View (tube, rainbow, N blue to C red):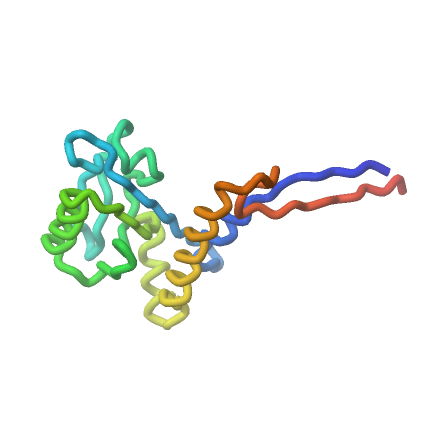
Length: 166
């Protein structure tokens, strides 16, 4: 009998907002600290089909380094739902955070998943209060765990499988 040990990141499971017949819809949590000398995060934001869509993410800027990509749709900025905000207000909010050198905490989904997301949200299947609370708790746990001497990565589950000879 042999013993196989592997590590599964439970971050992937945590990032699934919901699953339907078309597969999972993933959330992405991007925490961006402006480290640029130009006071830029490195992306453009457009308002298309009633959503705030990320475009032209620059590779050498904080947005890209922290996981933001083209066609991400921003839902929350620093735990504030921006879905129904005017585009000018959203861009002013982002500018004020960058100019005051504050961290920009984004919750995004992929543009391709927006219609499915809206359908689920309309039916009250998504509890943002609970999701944001859990997200904040995970952020605190990651901060604490980065000083741990444990050989296992934070937010990982160790799985031990035994194979039989039969």
